[in-house]
Amino acid sequence: DKMSMDAYEQNIKDELEGKKSPKRTNPEDERYNVDLSNYGIGDVQGKCLGDSLVNFDALEKLVLMENRLTHRCIPHILQNLSARSVIHIDLSCNTVHGNSNANALAAYFKVPNAVKVLNLSKTGFQCQDIQKLCQGLGSQPYQPLEELILEHNKIGAVGAAALSAYLCR
Image 1: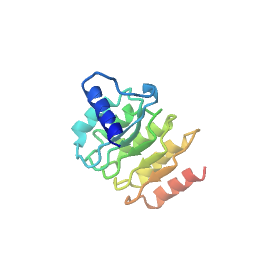
Image 2: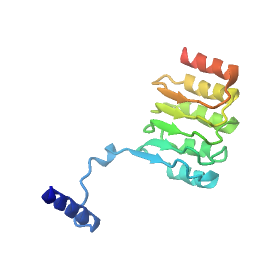
Image 3: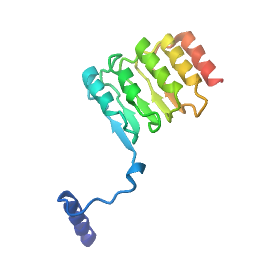
């Protein structure tokens, strides 16, 4: 109705002018989702992003789909990503395959973390990358991933065997 709309608009104006602070829940309970899909940020800005993630414990979801990220920044991003709060990581459509990225992913999953969803579709992952990732995932004595998305990668028979061994543990 008109009366409540006017009150709402006045509240917004007061907040913007600093007359009133916005109503918030406990700041420690706030969680953030960062979706940078399709920005094409590349490795230089990817490293800057990694720097900004240090001590950012309120991040819950990080979506970096299709950003031209490679081995030059993905390990740095993972190294600085809070293992306590992040439940969803999407690195799809980036160049994630290769030793340094597979090792960084394996290392990330060797420590206790909260990740439930990992999207690595269209990343060029191959059998040796899957093996390393599964070694990291297999060392978890805690809650495993609920969803691992690997579509449009060439994981081959060796990668499939590593996935099977991980899933059957």
